[in-house]
Length: 326
Image 1 (tube, one colour):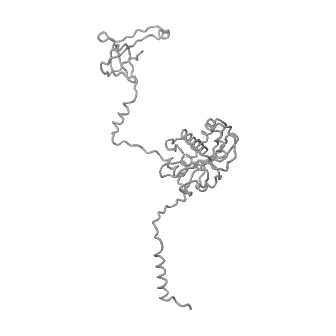
Image 2 (spheres, one colour):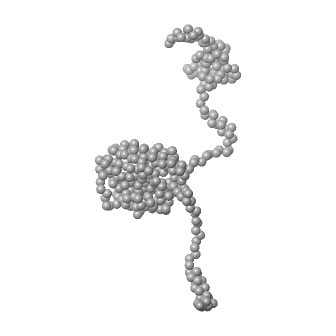
Image 3 (cartoon, helix red, strand yellow):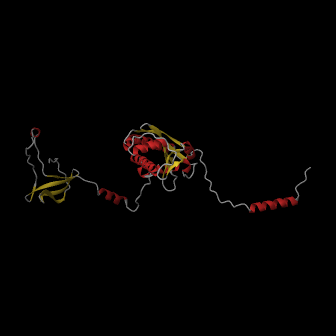
């Protein structure tokens, strides 16, 4: 039978544990976020469909405009919109290519725009007025001119998206940092869910892929419903009155009326004169002033600064029974 632990041994064990705990750093508070397994990437199916429509229309627009922009032959075909982790997206890219960070607003992770290396250099050649031949990928780092050309091309892609998007005011206008190597890409979290739009792009005889990737948090902000603006300080009646004050109304002056038989009406020719039966007022012709087809004022004809004019005499309440002929 084994001997039980003595009190002296327990005292030594307690002293050792106390000494160990004193040397351990104190742990700070950790905020734990619950993981939603039913909606891991935080987007509804409807939001994904809207984003798929946006990215597909972008491909159609680039297919029409990119060739004109490069003054050559260019085709862009939308492939798919995929959900993945950012680390999966970065792992699928070739080692050498061009990446541009796409700012999506304060507090929101940046998106990424990528162009394959051979396709990028072919596009640069076309942008500089060359024949757009596919050169080999140089072993060196890109020059500032080449990095600048990619920045201009990426800005053109964003500008094209804004022209056809339903959310132009929410889309970024300029790209940020430009990268050439994946190891230099500075991202906040490689575990974020992203939506990646892939396009098969061909410039002259060189084909490759153009991809646009946006974090799901940025997509939620892009597709968020617009906030309604309420003006509480203006009563509804005053707001309606202020709005109606700027509405255009049609004002017409009826110089007189006449009645003719149908037989005479059918025989009228250009140049004939129809006498109008207009009542007189103090030697001047009295006329009716209509607003939107309804008689509202009585007036008299006259001349003002060489132009035929009407002076209002007062409001009327009765509408003439017979229709006017002007």
